[in-house]
Image (cartoon, rainbow over all chains, first blue to last red; front, side):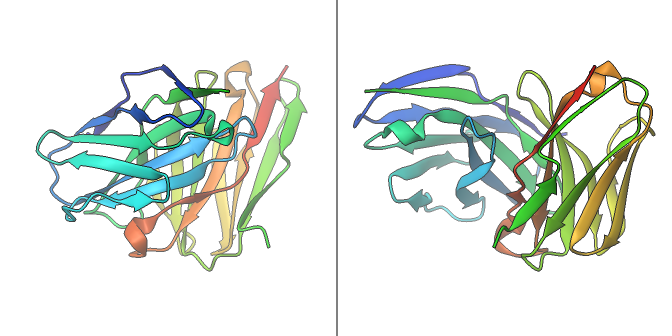
Length: 116
Length: 114
């Protein structure tokens, strides 16, 4: 079974600075997808960024980018120019590419605080 | 133009009662899911339906029964509620084969069992 580990329960960053959230995963599959979701206090789960394992290029979405290291099974999220609205719980998630409609396996989450 | 909606958003009830949570998506997706988020914020899959057919049924007490009347709806019925059922329940949907089957979540239903 796949597992996802986020080793940082809490992180903090100064507004306008850069922060990196860590995520590692364990799988024997070669085809899979990785995601970062954000959950602000409103509890809505919001997709931040997505990475296909077969793509070598790291995904980017505006201020959000990932460092995908397939061999190391690492998928970190970098937030540049942090804003107060980035404060939230961030979840890393894994989805198998071998079975359509399969589940997301989530990490434990990292609570990000942005200090003004 | 809400993509994935859930009703109710809050549900407070007594132990032993039966309750339902409704989910609807207007994204044209063919797969829908129920996840449970516990008090420590951990999210875990409960069920998944594809075109009204159950495809994932995790180790969930049989007091929980999902029902999918059509592709756009997936309801969750819970019988004989227990204190440990208190959690946030999320509905999600995805399109098979689309963008890694990215799942889009509803706003969640916070269930409190007293």
